[in-house]
Length: 374
Image (cartoon, rainbow, N blue to C red; front, side, top):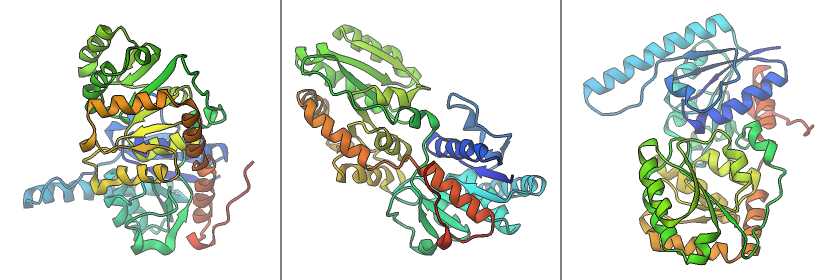
């Protein structure tokens, strides 16, 4: 039994894969602890770690000497904290999942010569991970190709993006093709933080649907808390059956039960859509650094598993047309669902755990051999 320290920024995109790995490592008899920031308690359940450490970190938010000094001070403080954690825990490996809270633990691991694995969720390597990839023992990639990985290409291993057990629990559910005139289950969400854009455009788009199509809709939508009342009143005026909430702890089951998903294209979202196998309209967040959401979406679209519409090209009229076209083509939806599922890697967490154990035992990225699916 070995101790493993995980490090992840406190967003769903970073924590969900870390959670999946923590549970897999726990099943294998390892002790897991987590280094993160104060946002980690927002995602509906406790992280499966023996202990959670809050480590100082900071994003570069300006180029002024004062801003840079504050960032440097926070990161140095975080490295000192992480060094203390590693000194006490004596982990066999440190595993980072991106975000600036990953920097201090990975830097401390390098200073203490502890093997490390860095996991990149997106098809574009994030800025923190571009720095850390140079010092990590191995870099695990979610996609077969990762932009901005040239500096550490020899360390790159394609594992896939781990998904939570809740996703694997519903992955075997077949797509329930909607009947031509039956209920149509539409799920809309904007990622772990919600998306005001959907709250603004969806009610107008639904209002533009033909009355017969609108009558079929059973809508589930994630909204920011401050938008709930306004969105509900718009749907009430349309007489629409709808469920609204700021966050759904059972989102994988809701994805599996839907006929169509409209959402952003963060790495965890794209991964879950592919593992479960559901058709989607993806609207990448337009302000994402390095257009990583657009690149993630393009992978799924290229396989025929989604339609991608840039936010700048989307208005209520076009969205209504896209929804109506899919409601009228159940066979097409089933084909898109199958294409999405063909890209999924449900064994990603096993492959990542194999890589972590390999590195913890002193192995290098190039020599890892993945075990058979049990």
